[in-house]
Length: 180
Image 1 (cartoon, rainbow, N blue to C red):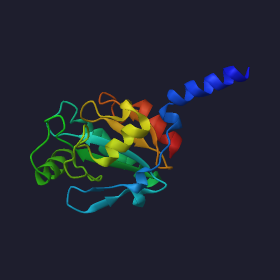
Image 2 (cartoon, rainbow, N blue to C red):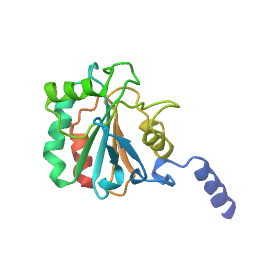
Image 3 (cartoon, helix red, strand yellow):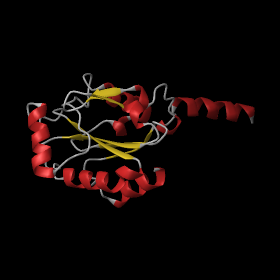
Image 4 (tube, rainbow, N blue to C red):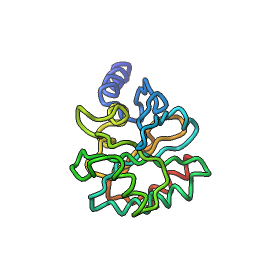
């Protein structure tokens, strides 16, 4: 019996899931530059739920900005932060932050926080995306624009959602409401 428990322990160690991630750091240990040049310190978002979404102006999913704004409007008073991370990692973003900001404000009336244009995958990815991969696995790595990473109030990844999952989907709403 002891041999079985020992073998199971070894197997579990090598196949640990993101649910047992070590989390040497939490999201609160990071910062990122806003689209207007200020520093966004995640420590300012302690005890909040954070939805991080890599965005792009020229993507087929760009209309999701409407639902991201709707989500922000519905839940910001309850503790949700929606953070748009414009990225050219998939070659579908404008050339500069000012153009992205204007595009978002004029076309979608965005008033949730946006970051500077940021790499979200590969060796040049911003440290928050490297942290997400390290702690949650491949599902945290954006495969395309409008990939969503949901951070709980403990500063850990609660779940991730593919680009095709709309921000106002029942799946995302239910998960947000459960952790708010």
